[in-house]
Amino acid sequence: MTTTSADLLKKTLLTNAITSVSAGLLCLVANGPLTSFMGLDSSLYLYICGAGFVLFGLDVGYTALKAIDNGLYIKAIIAADILWVGASVALLILAPHWFSTAGMVLIDVVAFMVAVFAVFEIVGFRRMTRPNFQLA
Image (cartoon, rainbow, N blue to C red; front, side, top):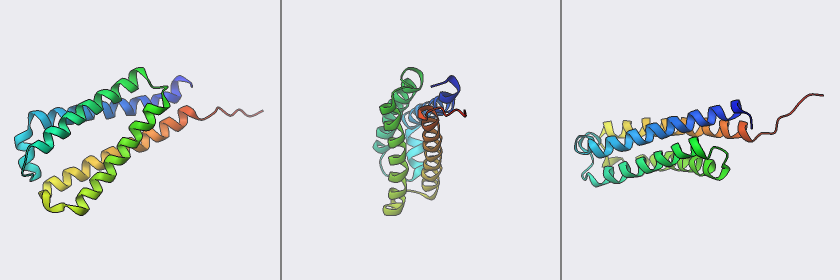
């Protein structure tokens, strides 16, 4: 692995980590207004998501800074991102009545951002693990 081959992956993971921790703290600190904005009937959902976002973000940050060479960690983060996008789509298809219009838009925006993270993580991981081919 060269320094440049890990740059895309590391920067994407760090951006994912910062965004996840920030979103988690927002869910925890501004729980009441965010619950109303999303049209939810209970604030418990956002407390659980907020705590999960913070823990996930800390794990992603650790991986970016200390375990960038651990393919299993990277694959787990990519899988979690893909599952998040799938769960968001399923939630909006199966239970749109749980959310306000603004809440559904917020879920769409977050799912799109997470999908972008997943794409850049996959590309960065492939670049990092691809053998270097040299022309003779």
